[in-house]
Image 1 (tube, rainbow, N blue to C red):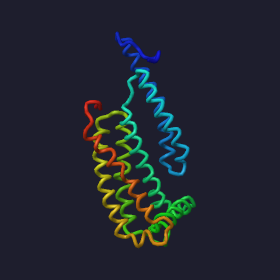
Image 2: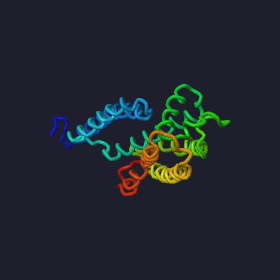
Image 3: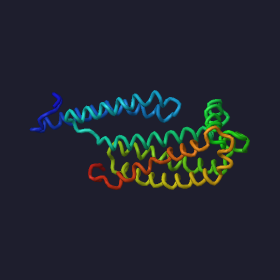
Image 4: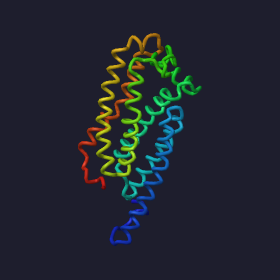
Amino acid sequence: MSSNTLALGGTGNLDEHHRQSRQAQWQADKWMMSGALLLGTAVFGIFGLPLFLRGLWLQIRAERSGLTMRPVIVTLIGYLVAVDAALNTIGWALDLVAHHTLLARVFLMAWGNMFDAGYFWHYNELWIGGATAPGEKSWEIALLPIVFSMRIAAAIGFLQMKRWGHQWLIVTCWFGVVAWAGYIANMTLYADVRYTGVVFPVIGWWLYDIFYITPFLALPYLHSVNREIFSD
């Protein structure tokens, strides 16, 4: 047992325990938030992962020392949902409103050449610009301002152990299931458009599956967890 562990025999000790627990959680979260921000950019994800893992290690170490920390499963689900939503938001936002920038033309068209021809062939030839894959712009307009922004907000509340964060994470995860089913159907029905002439067609299809699979990982826990651990 660490020397930081307190004998909770009085009010003063309890208050000190809570203070140390909040301080340790915030210290861990600073590392994990920095890592999650970099992971959410995709391009700098390789630098974000070590930061996130250090923050996770700090949280686990503090919990083992006897401090009261956020459950690790809550931390993992909350940050996983936030990073997943950020990855989709950045990529689609670039395609929707910044498709003529050098970053979009290099990053998105390289992705299209490797995995998804909808982001390569005839790119920027529609009147709205960006990807020409059938239905792609409809998905971007529908999911960016509604689902992904809501998922990031819900993940923040969830990480703060707020009841509204837990409730809205359930709602947005079910939104994610709908988006996953619809988008995978779109990818499959228009496979002749999206996977012809790319380097890794089958891998590309599975990469889209993986990007949208987070709701299936989170929903079993969200529906089975004791809701009393979340505060109003």
